[in-house]
Image (cartoon, rainbow, N blue to C red; front, side, top):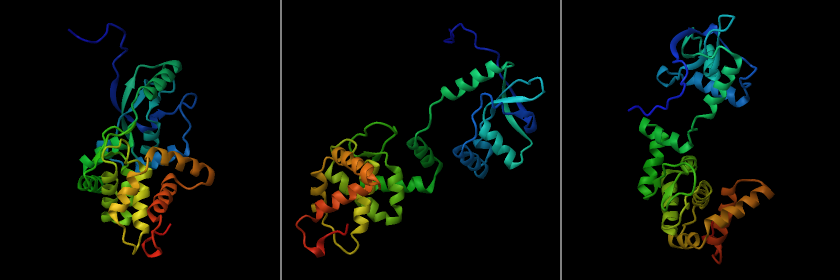
Length: 269
């Protein structure tokens, strides 16, 4: 027996290739193109490939013999920039303006936005050099990369892929060492590998320069810290004095490590 509820599902849409000059944007309900929107359009233009193109959703012809776009304004503008003459479209039966506006709202409300971690895992499968580098570093350090991009992460799990990638300029060894030190200090702590924590420790190791850091001492320093509390204090510092949470946390770690050490063994702040 079918699971489809006995209700009006509306007329089935028609799939057509439509001349791009016959598709119009009705500004009475469509969003204005913002600076972010223009950046998105440029990204579509620069990375355009039919395998990644989602057909537009348009209403059936209006009195002017045009097709009002319901979903896909940015794609439409990008296609015009590229110089395409026609694009694939789903044509839905929405002859009236109110129907088109309802379809526009429904289309944009009923979608799950991809998180950065969703994009990361897709990039891994696609063979992105940056994503595969991050995964390899985490694997070597015994740190898992989470699948859910929100909420507290389990022990020895991170979604701080951006911080790890940004640390690449400091060298693979520095990034891997930072992850191992956090893992050794907090093997049973949830949410230990947050962006600020990872970025801060990478920066600490990078700033050490010729100073030889004692890993056992650093692990003891990190183990004594409650990262949640330290990040909350870093947030307050950021609001008062600017900078980033990672920068504030870096100073805290360095001062704790340097405590009672002689000058030659101290990490520069």
